[in-house]
Image (cartoon, rainbow, N blue to C red; front, side, top):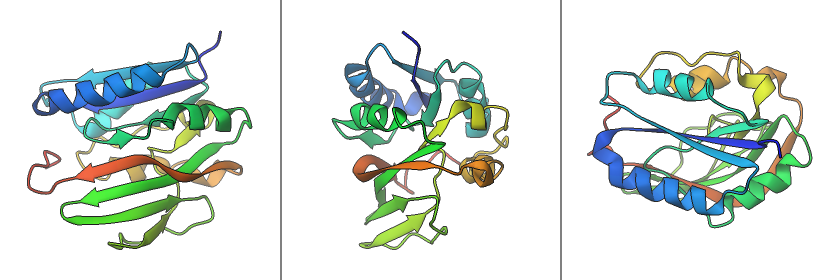
Length: 185
């Protein structure tokens, strides 16, 4: 059976426990149509370089990224596989965002403009790297070799080519950023 979805997790040693938790959660949901790949190093590569290296390994028709400190819903993979059946350019969804003490919801959609994060509200954004992209649309585009901003730096290279989307109208991903412990600098 062909691989439909590649889920890519860049990681760092200080978050080994978190990596194991998210990897295990994804592995338990995975079917024989899904590969879950992780990349951990001793911080000698930028996050952009790690994302790029992972992208070079994918076998799936679709690709997405989950960070080692993020979380996903119990139906994350099932929801995505339903969307893949429709063969869109990108699968979008809602995300819970926890940024320090602030919380909010991100609504990803091709028709949105990128808004600044609004605590306790819904922030509208175009699809980012965590959304599920058709591999043949995105694979040739390289991530910038950066520790921060590599996500949009990659997506803006090809988003104009995405014409169709499948919308999962619920929260299936949680982004967690703690400015007290970030290692992105």
